[in-house]
Length: 77
Image 1 (tube, rainbow, N blue to C red):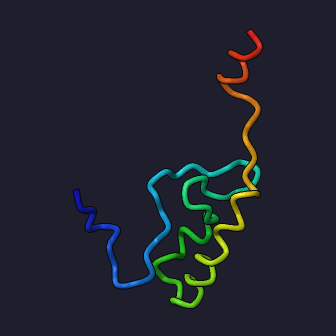
Image 2 (image 1 turned 90 degrees about the vertical axis):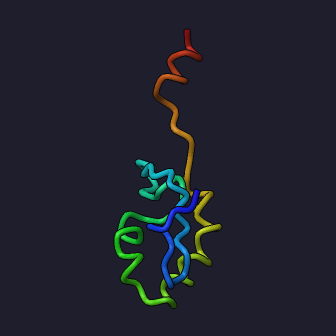
């Protein structure tokens, strides 16, 4: 199915529709952008979007797995 809302005449968004902000890194775990970058994306000049797109692969290392939650509790039991 086509998603016309996400199609524009600009640098394509890296959004993969998995929008969860990592609590420590403050980056979206789906696209690796900051909240500010996500908010401003459609108003950014193309040069700024290109710069962010080039930097995104280096951000993956900033995300660490959470140690709490249900999975951690089940592992202890």
